[in-house]
Length: 123
Image (spheres, rainbow, N blue to C red):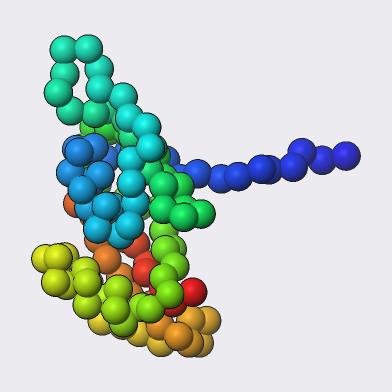
């Protein structure tokens, strides 16, 4: 007998939850739950969803060091070229679309406000 994982949700520690919510909104995510501590005006935690993608954002207890990442996020889109153009139009800095052997339909890098690397790829 073995345990059966039902789902997996990434939890990302961020410097500013509200800023990260706004960034991920540009990728189609919406906030479905959040916590604003008593006496505060900004959330310290949020749960975001976009179709079958789920993400939790939590306020980091120390500064984020983007050079020490041990995780890489892959987000999949129906039209990678259109997604690239939208990200650029929204003021983000998407990397060039590359076509490696494992992602022949294309992928590109995009950093979130804390420097986490996202790979946006053709689904």
